[in-house]
Image 1 (cartoon, rainbow, N blue to C red):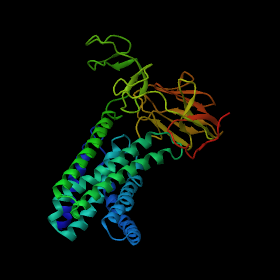
Image 2: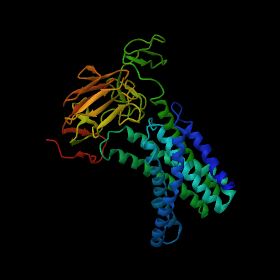
Image 3: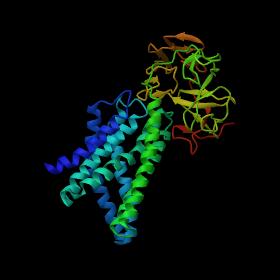
Image 4: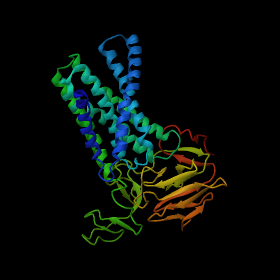
Amino acid sequence: METLALSLIPCWLWLLWFWFQDWYDREPLRTVLVTFALGALATLPAMLFNAVGVFVLSGVLGANVMSEWLILFLVVGPVEEAMKLWAVVRYAYRRPEFDEPVDGVVYSAAAALGFAAAENVLYLSRFGSEIFIVRGILSNPGHALFAAFWGLALSRAKALPNVGSLRARTIARGWMWAALVHALFDALLSAGHHRLLPNAIVMGIVALLMLAIFAYVEVRTVRHVARSPHRQGTMVLAGLAPCPSCGRVGTVGRACAECGAQIPDTDGRRCPACGTRQRAGVTICLECGASLSPPPSTPVRVREPHLVRRLPDGREEIAFVLDRPVITVGKTLDNHFVIDDPTVSKHHAKFVRHPSGGFVVVDLGSTNGTYVNGQRVRENLLRNGFEIRFGRARFIYRAWESSVSFTEGGSPPSRLDPRPTL
C-alpha cells in the first residue's frame, strides 16, 4: 500500500499542475483520469516491445555501454513515447472535450504521468523508497515534458487540412522529438550509472536539459492559452480591433478613443512563427520578423468535393476535403474543419451531403453568419465555384476534381493526386 501511494502521489500532483494550465475551459476530470489509466496500461505493451528490442539488439551488438545507448535511442525512447501517444489517440483525441490547442499538453501529460505511475510501482517494488525523490523530481515530470512534444503536435494536426498523411506526418514529427529527448535523458542517467562522468556533472546536465524542455513547453502552453477560443466570445464583424498602444477596442482605421493611436486593420492572417495577427499588406511579421510570404507549393489535383483559399497571386490552396456525410465548422478543435479566426464562432456551421452528391452548408446560429456568394443564408445547396464566407474567412467550393496548391512541403498527401498540372 505504501508503494502504491508513493507511486501515485507525485504523478497526481504533477497532473494537477498541468490540468491547471488550462485556464479557460478545464478538461473534465473523468476524461483526464481515463487517459491517465490508459497511460498506465500502456506500460504493458511497452515492456513487451522493449524486451524484444533489447533481446534482439543485445544479441547483435553485445552487452556494453554503446549498445545500451543505442537501445535507448532505437527502442526505449520510441517505444515508450509511441505507447503513451496511443493512449491519447485511442481516447481523448477523439473526444469533443479536446477542443483547444492547450488540450494536447493536458492529455499528453495525463497519459505520460499514468505511464510514470505504473513505472514507479515497478521501480519502488524493486529498489525501495530510496528512489522516490529522484523519480518524483526528475522522471515523473520528465515523462510529461517529453510527451508534450507530440501533445502539441496533436493540437496542430487537428487544425490542419484533412489531406491524407499531412496530419499523420505532423504527429510523427512530434513523436520523434519526444523519443529523442526521452532517450537523451535516459542516456545521461546511464552515463552517471556507469561512472563515465561525475554524478554532479551528470545531474547538472540533466537539470539544464529539463529546464530547457520545460521552458519550451511552457512558452508554447502560455501562447496556446492566450489564443484559446474559450478566452473570449466571437469578435463581431463591425470593424473592431484592439488598439496596439493601450489595448482598448476601437474601430479599425480610426484613432483610439483612449490614447489617440491609429488602430490598423488586419487581414485575418497570422504569422506562421509566432501567431500574431497581421496588418493588411505587410510581408514580414512586425512581432518576430518572420516572412509572411507563402512557402513554395506543390501542384496537385483533388478528386473529392473540397474547399480552397484563393491566394494573392491567384493560386488556389487546399483548405479542407469534404470527405464525410456531415462536417462541422468552427474555431474550436472539436470541429472537423477548424478555422482560426476571431470572427468565426466556436460551432459556426456544418456541411451536409445532399442526395445529389453535392453538399448543403447550414449555419448553426453563428454570431457573424454564413454567406454564400455574398448573401447571408441559413442553409444553401452549393454549386461549383460558389464563394462561402464564415465570418471573415472566405473559401471557394469545388464540386469536382481541380488543380490546387499544397504548401506544407514534402510529398503530396495520399488523398491528393500528384499529377502535374498543364
